[in-house]
Amino acid sequence: MFAAGIFDDIPGGVLFLLIVIAIAIWLALIRWTLTDARRRLRSGSLIRAATVLAVLPLIGPVIYMILRPPEFLEDAYEREISIASSEKLISVLAELQQTQREIHASVKHLEHALHASRRRAAAQQAAQPGGTRTPPPGGRQ
Image (cartoon, rainbow, N blue to C red; front, side):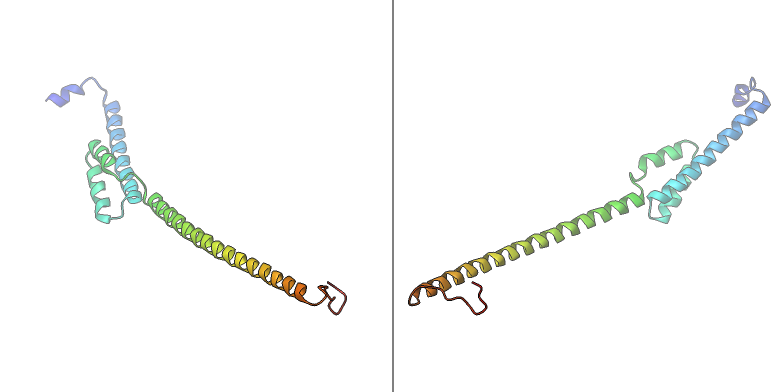
């Protein structure tokens, strides 16, 4: 037996301890793969497939690490929400800017109308006989 010859020099207790440690690491890798797959994958069948893949000692978790999605579902969701909120903010700011332009144009129109009204009033006052302004009742000008 070839395999028995390799372990002949290792005491039985040490060999048992190494086997227990190897099994514990293998089970921990299966558990880690399952937990990580739940955080990265939406499909239950893909989560089960990743866990079954992890049953292959050492190579299974390595294959999973190569093939797994690059980001957690929570991170992808936060990124999508951030993009959506940024787009909404941009649209609100664009609407605000358009409203500001409309208000500015209305104010300019009102200023021009006010100045024209004042010029007409001044022209009418100058056209009155005597050209002097009569104070309004109450004494203010």
